[in-house]
Length: 300
Image (cartoon, rainbow, N blue to C red; front, side):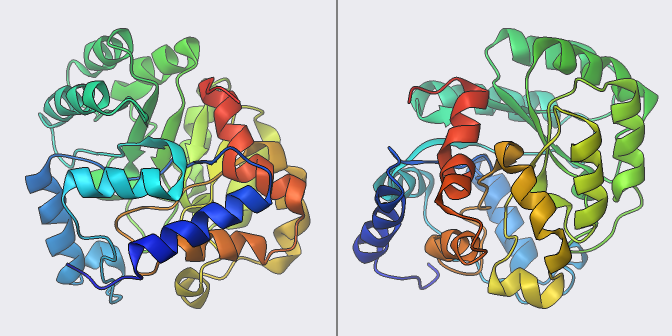
């Protein structure tokens, strides 16, 4: 197990953060739960400094088993979280979606999460997941190495836009660029499906301003804060301070994300990184709870 702060002390500090803002808790739209053998392979990839990590040392802070990880989020006061999972080849998505449906059934505070991949039958897979109650999808352009504007996905994006189901999508080029990362491919998707509720992971790191452009152009585009502004990310891909007023103006469409458990620092650090932007308590309340609670229909 990776060393991390005493969980009782850390939980107290996290709760003090959101209590100080007058919130009922946090909603984190970017947390990872997946079949244990898949997650262990992900951890092994980070440990080996695989190329998609950018070759950066990346210790996993919360290397606990599934139940302990879920319990820790509850101790932190995270009242809604996700099971971000993603395929890297054909044939995986349907199997992962079956696991995620079971996980959501036994984990009521987890938003039922599904995923997709450009392969024959993808529209049927997505329709089945939506019919089964999926409330959010995960797409990972970097790991999946696919073009999100692939015609094979067009019907799936249209179905999700019509259903109003949000999609958290890793489409920025951090921590390492891929053939189809960056703003241009996803801009082609949005041109065809302007009502698609995309949540751009990591604020689109490192192409922050390009993805802010897309959020300003399309009213259903949102961005999550995953790893942004932390000391770790600021060393690798600093957010341009000239863009902070734009981030403030989009305060109703910025959502808290953490990448828990796969983060190389304590959970609290993400919250403090947002706080030190000095964008005000109202902005923090919206980002850390209210925007996601409204999007997913969570009680106040």
